[in-house]
Length: 101
Image (cartoon, rainbow, N blue to C red):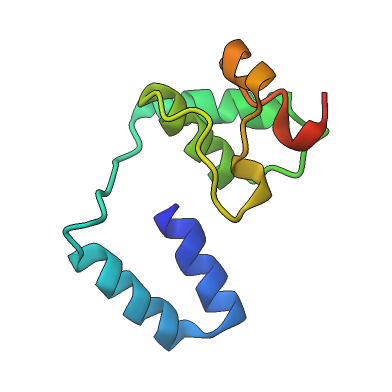
């Protein structure tokens, strides 16, 4: 989420604002940074290869892998890729993303 957020701010608003936001996020005690491990990367790669019919970036797939590891299923944010419906939640993957099966 950190990398995707900063990239979006950089592209839409500008570099200086992205750096400013990054510094705020990195210094905040309200935000926990979760490291991506080797198994997360392997799972992200599996998802990325499997779901060619979805507009998922590798960053999206990495986020799903981390959420799966941390049991953070059914979380929502403004990015439509992060909605896991009940079928995806029960299947443990992102097959039910935004209504596509």
